[in-house]
Length: 488
Image (tube, rainbow, N blue to C red; front, side):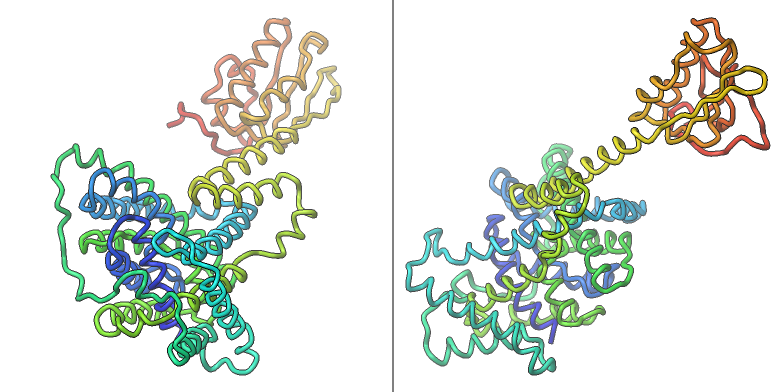
């Protein structure tokens, strides 16, 4: 029953996204069928729903307008190949590096996007409906939402979302209410999808045209899919498999491209419907795909009679449940930089697209992390029994802390022999090596003798000016790797 509910929610979304991409409604519906079926069967996150998405459609439209729909099909195939490579190289683990603040912004941003996208259904041929039609739609949406929220208090035998759609459809049909239906968006009647090799020249020129689009589509598709996977992991307290999901998304898009569809990725709205209905396994996704195909082949006339208002009400509920309302209170308690990331990612997701928002959030979070760790490098000084000055360094020496490191020392004021103790510090990258070399040069120019203790053998291998100053102790020296091309 959850699969049937998801299938009904997939129909208007697939049609709407197909129209955004300037392709036929059936192109979007067939895409939803293939992507949903293949990822449900072979994906790394049972219970997650995939299909044609708006995030990809807005990228596809310029390719279709400039070069035609056949180039779109070719780009979807190449997009799938890129995703397969991503999964085969086992790069899915990097999605775990997305900070929680970015996840919050992603979830809130998508909830707002889902909410705002529904208002496009209040237009007919690009023109807003009149007041009377607005009132009718609003009343039906309110009834739908009321059923979804209240029915579970009476019974959970039937998914409340499915019951709401069927009840509202029955009210509209029984009372003869004039309102916008799925059929008004475009016919969903069709036959079985047919295998189709994209009709484009198989040349380098074609590759140069579609490759940039395919890379962007692959990146957006994987980011949205793997972040949705992370979200469902948290909700269900289970662990998905990002690499397996990447492979399934790639295979699904390759197949979709060869059946003349627009491809797709995970859909957070439909996934939340499925998870909220209690679906945790692969069956609901497979059933959703098969029902969707059944709608196209046998039930198009009935599905086209479903009022769009019922589906809008369902998506409004999804948006409300997706938005992390607790994050609004948390903004006043969490560190300011995390609050900025949450708000920034949310706003960028709404104004641009998901990939840019997540990339900006990760970059900002990384810079904040680097800045905070750069300030944590400290030193304690003492004079040992021989009269040598000992600097005991603590913290991480890397590109962001190199400047602070240099300011900790005063070669002109130090005695003849100076020791820098690295036992409680870690040298991370080439910038750190350059900082040590530069400090060694300062001591040489001041006529002082510098002793470097407890450095990793990796550091000794790449140091230049300071190499002769390193005191090697194989039993006490730490062993860690640094990021430097000389060691490649």
